[in-house]
Amino acid sequence: PVLVLDFGAQYAQLIARRVREANVYSEVVPNSMPAQEILAKNPRALILSGGPSSVYADGAPRLDPAILEAGIPVLGLCYGFQAMADALGGRVAETGVREYGATRLTSVDGDSVLLAGQDLDQNVWMSHGDSVHEAPDGFTVIAESAGSPVAAFEDAQRRLFGVQWHPEVGHSDRGQEIIENFLVRGAGIEPEWTTRSVIEEQVELIREQIGDGSAICGLSGGVDSAVAAALVQRAIGERLTCVYVNHGLMRKNESEEIEKAFGASTGGAKLVMVDAEERFLTALAGITDPEEKRKTIGREFIRVFEQAQEDILREQGVVAGTGDDAHAEAKAFLVQGTLYPDVVESGGGDGTSNIKSHHNVGGLPDDLQFELVEPLRALFKDEVRAVGTELGLPDEIVHRQPFPGPGLGIRIIGEVTKERLDVLREADAIVRAELTAAGLDRSIWQCPVVLLADVRSVGVQGDHRTYGHPVVLRPVTSEDAMTADWAKVPYDVLSRISNRITNEVREINRVTLDITSKPPGTIEWE
Ligand code: XMP
Image (cartoon, rainbow, N blue to C red; front, side, top):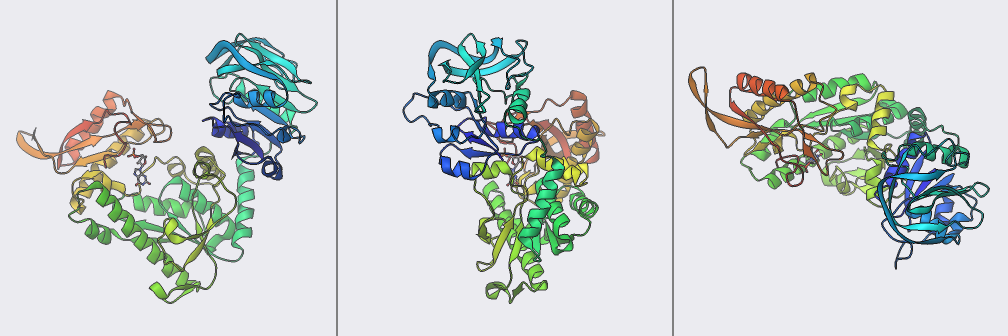
């Protein structure tokens, strides 16, 4: 891989994504990783990320010169560029001129390897106080700006390169070209990493891992578990069994759609649909506290899933006995849709881990050991979507908006009952249909519809007094659900939604709009 050495920037993952966009596989590693370990990964090239520190500050992360002496092509960005200059004997200091945001260069060497074809007609995104004043021996200065006497340098012989700005951010007009110049011209890497190659490679790896064993995958209806299942299905065919638990808190027709789409997308795999509506509704009776609802739903889900898995494993002869007596006789595999950001955030790590079930979806019997199969653990969300499309999954699944595990259970404020769920399902179906008809599915992150089941208000309809419930529309835009803004849905769309709900859903006589950003409001109401 091309390794991105993370110096604490929020940019490291972004750099890895840009490299992948250039069709070259890339991973992020922490700067605390010893040089030997980095070199042992046999990187085809290294990119040093930016970071918040000053090279001269106490405790600033250093760059081990061994990395620069190993003959591996290296590109330093921002802090990485300065750390490189510092490690090789250049001079880094404050200029007194800080550069932040879109900046113009004052000179560019369009004949250099790194900046080939570039000129002054571009913005570059800067964010730095220190600057490189003198390039180390052997380097040529290939760009300058007002605040950076050395804004970029290269030693094409040793294949070492650096720029002061952030080519990975979209505000640097021609940044992607620089990354591609480095990879292809500088490091001589053939760009051949594509969605198709990912699929071939993963299918191969899954076959190796599972051998002639069999696997189970919990489907949620979301894109990650669907794509993971489709990959494993391609690898081991009918030895994969998928489990879908219908907790009765899904939206209108959702379980049926998931079942139908599953058949269309993963030919041979078996699907076990577990209908647990009764069980969940019984468990939720009388509960109004949001946390208690969540805990109840989570607990019941685990119990149902656990039971389904045990049944399947017993049928396959992997497990004998029941409950506490159950014991593993052969290796069982559990497929999960873990994504790359989860892996990076939890500190990285290679390969698969043998886990006890209560660390994942399961809470399975303690003596049931599962080996995880995580074919998406190297991928970003949009790459997962591309893989899904390439595998032939329908758009409704591949571009599905997020939907919370506890489902509509956390969108009814008050006790959850079958009647209330049915009311909410109708209103929610209208909202989804109208947003889709207006072409807003991709611009809106998601739009929860919340039923204020314990609130009533007076209305009038056809000369009659009504005394119904309000629903709240919560359309939001977001990048990652960590923060969100309320979506400015056009008035005519809102108006159609409001008319239809109050006309078609008898119990609802008022439609309101939530115009709170996150923070302070969360996306879901509970
Ligand atoms: P909040 O309400 O925290 O939601 O702003 C952020 C995102 O997470 C989704 N969400 C959940 N997803 N299980 C899930 O799988 C949950 O318990 C859960 N709670 C919230 C929510 O829909 C939004 O996209």
